[in-house]
Amino acid sequence: MKRYIAILSLCLSVSLCACGAAPEKSVPDAGGPAKKAVYESPDAYGEIPELGAETEDFSTLAGTWHADEGGAILTIYGNGGFELNEAEDTCEGSLVYTDADGDLWESGPRYELYLENNERVPNCYFALDEAHPGKLVYAVGGGAELFSRGDSAYDDAGIVVRVQWDNGTWTDCDEFTAYSGDYEVGIVFSASRTLRDFKVLSVSLEDVDEDGTPVFSVLELYTQDALTPERPLLVHTSFPGDMPTNGISYLDGDGTTRYFSVNESGFDGSLILSEFARSDTP
Image (cartoon, helix red, strand yellow):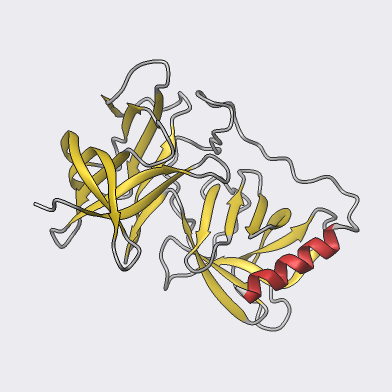
């Protein structure tokens, strides 16, 4: 936490002297309420680039990332612009790919942080790490933290399933309508590998256990034998009220059913998958 505050304070102190414009946030038009952010490359699953790949294509990283510990939130845009938020502090600028040796321990493929005035933040970068598939490592001040995609579910091999707002460009996909009406929106589930016994759920919060895990009751609305990388699933639904009402489940490699609620971020309107315990586990 202190590391986040330190780097954000540095970002803010330099930004106050900057005269350059903030990086353009290239976000295509989306259906539904205007606040819903739909990032670039909606037809791409969002696989993490291979380590060492010389790339300035940020479409695979675009989205909202959450620190595994603490409340920091990183938003990456398709053009490389970023916002890093911790508490009430915000740092904005652009990510720049490099694999050249730099200050102190800086080496290997990474994304360095440049502020609005094009000044690089020293000893600070995001990197991909084979030891943490699908996650970003945030290195700053000699320490490191992990960031995970808020819209994705993980296992030891990396991202398993991802949820996104439908922006009308999805074509090769299955469809299910849970709700149709004035408040209808579309959300798309895509998988990095075949997920067995994939279900769309209606969920209702019942309790929070002693570990802080939410406990939901579940109503199964739709089932398909598998969700595959080749065929995403478009679900027509709604988001009434402030509590999650949408969810999914699937069988993992160990034969365990995993449950996730679909939440709307109060920060930027993006979608978040949150694992929960089922109150009436079969």
